[in-house]
Image 1 (cartoon, rainbow, N blue to C red):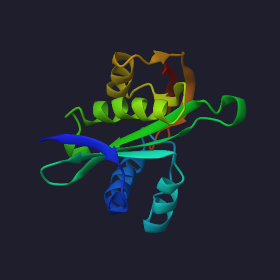
Image 2 (cartoon, one colour):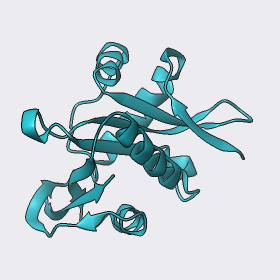
Image 3 (cartoon, helix red, strand yellow):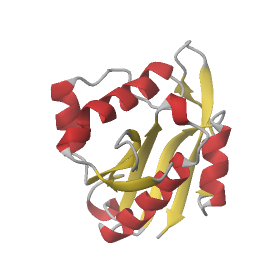
Length: 163
């Protein structure tokens, strides 16, 4: 399987919406609780500074995606933020790593000087290990900062990476 990461195209939207909604449904990583549909999904992805998709070159299948946008405005507008989603049936194949690496390049190309993640759920150890391996610095712990799908609270860990 040869995987490339490229900018999304309109034809990718159904797969992007499906993968995004799968992570929302899991209820253990994204803060969103509302699912995207064809209309809200197109609007959501169009509102980002950049969207990358991981595609299997052999099949053309979209396996994962990321969104890139400012973390804040004005004097903090140079700090970027990203979210990543990988289809559950291909997790563990280092697709997330390819998405994060590409997002760092795109963040720099889009004028961001820092990438910041506000709310990495502490129990999401695979993501945390990946971020730290790629040079992200943990900033501490916010106790009970994320409400899991089952209603209990987990700590969150903010991260940053200078570009």
